[in-house]
Length: 219
Ligand SMILES: Cc1cc2nc3c(=O)[nH]c(=O)nc-3n(C[C@H](O)[C@H](O)[C@H](O)COP(=O)(O)O)c2cc1C
Image 1 (cartoon, protein in one colour):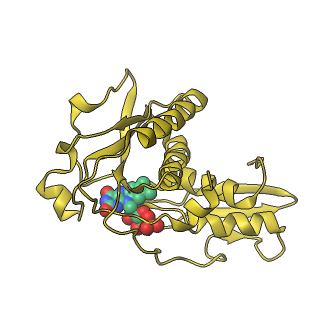
Image 2 (spheres, rainbow, N blue to C red):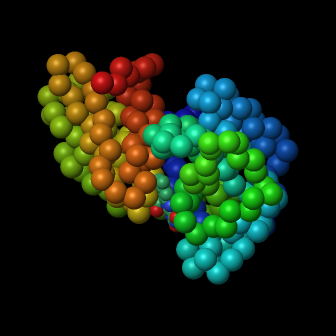
């Protein structure tokens, strides 16, 4: 699975073709979701052929059309960053499998019969999912110096990580995260804002992937 290519090619897609996700693709995506849940303790669920969540004035006002599949990003409370990290892992895997996605915090209805929420858990966001009518367009982006400290003197892996983080989806395209490099150590901070901690988890997943390092020791 070429996740670097998926990261470069992923853009928010809000309109989908009337075409069910094929069985083998569903099976592979379910396997990835199961692995994410086993590793993280989250309760992410794949929901297919469920048109009600996005069949409303609110969804159409939000420019969502033809959404019949989605991923419910469910976990215990205060796990925003983890939801971002593993949610984006699922989104990029979906992209690599030929699907399109969009992170959605608003603009959808919670159809309670479609998924299970355990005690102490909540539904943070969903990822709309399907074959897009197009592949979306690159977002307007901040510069590396807007979102990092110590960029010029940092090693290449850090620079690659920051550039990859700039490709990450963020709520309202706010890109409020900041990555710092000092004394051989990397840290990342969320900004203040709507879903900023979820955004941080998404950006950290992109950073790790783009850096080419097997593991980043975050401080
Ligand atoms: C946590 C989060 C919540 C989002 N919520 C919504 C939403 O409710 N409605 C919407 O249309 N887009 C939503 N988005 C999509 C962003 O607007 C989009 O990712 C951003 O503009 C960057 O564009 P890109 O995904 O094409 O890179 C959300 C993104 C994130 C990360």
